[in-house]
Amino acid sequence: MSNALVSDDLWERIAPLLPQSPERRYRYPGRLRVPDRVALAGIVYVLRKGVA
Image 1 (cartoon, helix red, strand yellow):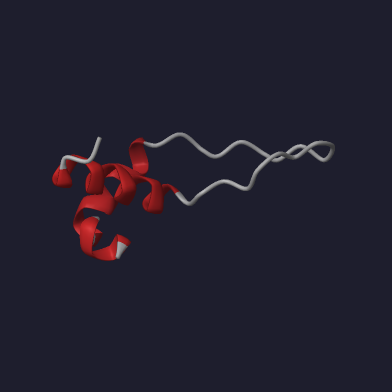
Image 2 (cartoon, one colour):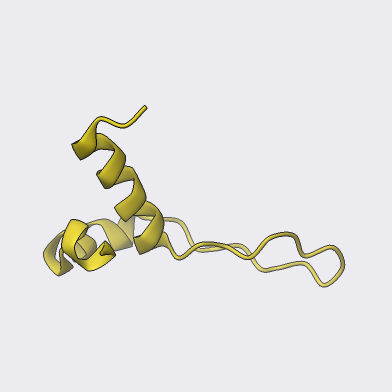
């Protein structure tokens, strides 16, 4: 699904603009990060569908 919303061309243009992911702490590492492309696909989905 994320590949349909975020094409390879779009991802190649946006990926260099994103900051590097921070290192996980050894103690209290927190929740695992969602991959950036999947997060962008979620944002594009909400914007296209008009979901609140």
